Length: 192
Image (tube, rainbow, N blue to C red; front, top):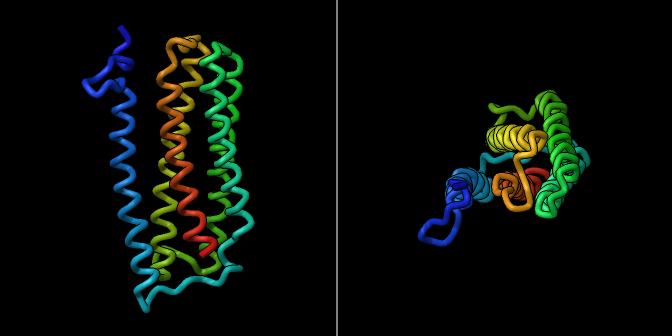
């Protein structure tokens, strides 16, 4: 029997319940940092916000588009396997993986430029929060890319079907969470 699809007393499969519990802990982690950022930004005289030109808003906007598009391709991957379309599953997982790598590539280009502009971990509260939160987010993107890579390997082996595709759904939940975190980080660091 497929243990990840076994139902718990809640009626939710074990794997899905586990993913939701994990995501709840991640909400608390990011929520704590984001709350501290908002409180200090609105209430501290020592919180200096860099000039808008230093932030690289156009590049961050492009990166937001890239990550949101990757969320759409994860939905399309799940839709494909629900229709037992193995080629579609593999195609959309590859696109999601490439878009996630593109996001990381843009961030790796952006980080040295921020540093050059004087926004560093030790330059003030903004820099400390920026690098801590975006760095933590990047670690989560890397974890998601690992999960997608795992799915791709299994998809090439034909392990997913229209009746057995829970892990694709769970990876999608995680990836959407990662995207949602970025959708919150983007305006608080680049637009407000």
